[in-house]
Length: 488
Ligand SMILES: Cc1cc2nc3c(=O)[nH]c(=O)nc-3n(C[C@H](O)[C@H](O)[C@H](O)COP(=O)(O)OP(=O)(O)OC[C@H]3O[C@@H](n4cnc5c(N)ncnc54)[C@H](O)[C@@H]3O)c2cc1C
Image 1 (cartoon, rainbow, N blue to C red):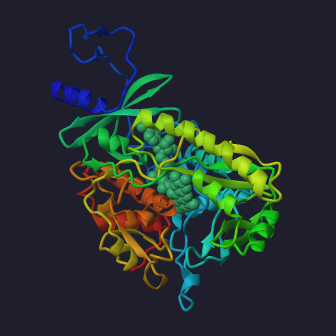
Image 2: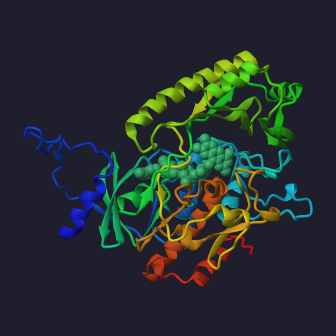
Image 3: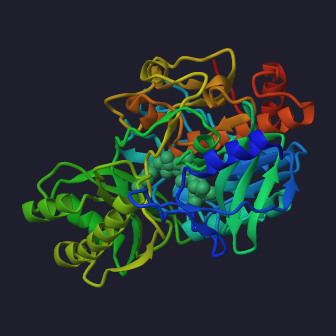
């Protein structure tokens, strides 16, 4: 590493607060000076790969699979001990593999996201880990299908698929810095109980949701703090049918779907309270703790996700404010159980069966890319000459729906991190317009972006070219070969 690189590395690694090594020398003795500890420089072991995927969540799993299947020597760096990210911690259902066909009666039903995301669903189905793509029978102006997944089987299946594809999976490993050479990422720094390492590669994909890698690499970003954070709970000791009867009795069934549950077809798998005449006290108490009365399930007697939301005063990259939010969300979880036991028949013995290890975000950093998808692109169903996928779901439906139950295209340029030659981004960290983000941030769109970025990164690595030099027809051909569906 030359002097310029090492200087830049020090700057990039300074973004996060890192624990100091025990052998450094204090430099904070001058009176009035800020407290700083000067870390001694260290030699790090280097590992060499073709592609680094940072973050093994919704998008990252698919990105790593796609890169490895293109023949790239691929490493996946994930902070937690499992893969799956927000899919297994926060979300209720995978929105959405389909166009909004039921809301537009003359429109043909089309599965618009296929490829690796569908393969994951197929693998889950083999183990009884999904409801399948069930048709919504109420509330289908929002989504026409409901695909719910078992969170624990999802973790297993994705780890198995990564292993089969030959991805070098580093779980329990935190990405803590970037090594830059001009406008190229040369490598990343990781920390784990096996020590601190430098991982070099030709191309990089940031799927950390927070945009950690892009930020360390010096990319431009904003922190809009425009959503609440959440920690969803899995609630057991409940009776879904009695919950349904309760909502029905109060004319409050908002969304409803039947599908495969505990191996039996035709069971309630999605239930959401709508406006009706629910007991006012219940509505008030639920609102106080940011509780949404919506759940999906793949098991009898289980609400897979009950969301507790909290609006933080600052961006969730602020560690100390996050600490306060973690405590408040734990209190809200306990209160949620009290509310279920008190007000909802069939839930008298409800208890928390699962929580997320840490709070979930809907947006951390918004990374500036070569193109920024607008809500007009989404609702007008715009396609681009560099589409990498088609997508048809909007989380603000029915206020915003893609025109005529169709799709829009996610362009490749929306995934190229601006100003950096060999860094792509996929997941909730793109799209500044919050209305448009209410579409692009959904799980199935993030997965599709993952397949595109992983494929593109592998092609760039094989051709030794930057992400802007990759020829679109080559990317398109590889994506089509990988089962990706295109429209427009
Ligand atoms: C409460 C909630 C409910 C939602 N409900 C739905 C829903 O019902 N349907 C739907 O389609 N979408 C839903 N969404 C949105 C959707 O789930 C997310 O936007 C999407 O899953 C984000 O995918 P991602 O790959 O960007 O991030 P994630 O899936 O969060 O993956 C990021 C990964 O990066 C890892 N990571 C982060 N930083 C580092 C680092 N420095 N080093 C190593 N690893 C790191 C994380 O541990 C994580 O595994 C919901 C979101 C929330 C928060």
